Every structure is written in structure tokens, then in C-alpha cells.
Amino acid sequence: MGRGSDISIDDVRIEPIYNDIVERSLGKHITPFSDITGDGLPDLVLQEYPPPGNHYMPFIVRILSIKNGSVFEYEPIEAGGEVYYFVDFNKDGVLEFVNTDSESNFVYSEDGMPISDSVWHLEKDQNKYIRTSNK
Image 1 (cartoon, helix red, strand yellow):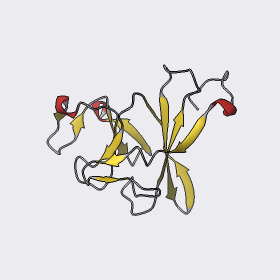
Image 2 (cartoon, rainbow, N blue to C red; image 1 turned 135 degrees about the vertical axis):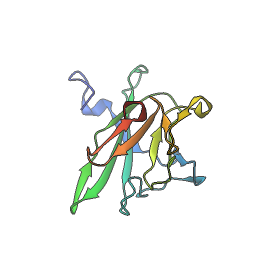
Image 3 (cartoon, one colour; image 1 turned 30 degrees about the vertical axis):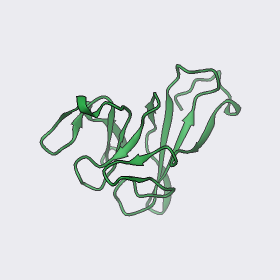
Image 4 (cartoon, rainbow, N blue to C red; image 1 turned 120 degrees about the vertical axis):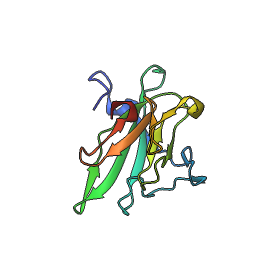
């Protein structure tokens, strides 16, 4: 999904990203099976790294959750750079994914949500994370 047919599964590295991710509004590191989606159930967040030497490809963030007793994967998020974390901007219990280090440039909506191409919010009715600039 999103990688192209010329890349084999052997070229891709997938691993949990919890050591790198901090949930900033609580000031703590996300741990495996933290509740990211706000449904009270554990979620698993994985990062799919581009093949070695392919620095211009985005990395893919995959969020797996439990829905109706089965494992469910939300639509993957294509991100880049080295700064990424989760934060609950509007305090609704759903953590937004942020892919920038310049929060000072955000413009915020009335509910506290930044409107940015660098912030993704879970749209539960669509079962995917979308950029807040597209809401």
C-alpha cells in the first residue's frame, strides 16, 4: 500500500515507534497498546520506514485497533521528517498525529484544533486520519 511495485517486502522495515513518540499533552511516552483512538481499547502504532538509501520517500504510520472483536487498520498516514508525536489538542480523548516541530505557526479553530497540513485527526465515521486542513 503506497510503496510501489518495485520495492520488495525485504526492503521495508516495520517496527513500533513508541520510544520516539511522546504524547505531549500528558508529557509521557506512548507505550505499546496505548489508547490512541479514544475508544478505551488498546491500539498499536507502527512505523514503516522507506528502504535504505531512499531518503525522499515518506514513512508510513500504521494504526491498528480492535473493532467488533477483530483487528482493524486505519488508512495509513504518509509522513516525513524526524519530528512526529501524538497530542490531544481538543481534549476529546482521540490523539492527533503531528508531523512538525513548529507548533508556534499553527492557526487554531475554536475547539482548540490546529488547522494544518502537519496535523492529522481521526474521523471516526470515515475510519481514517485526515489532515486538519482538510476538515
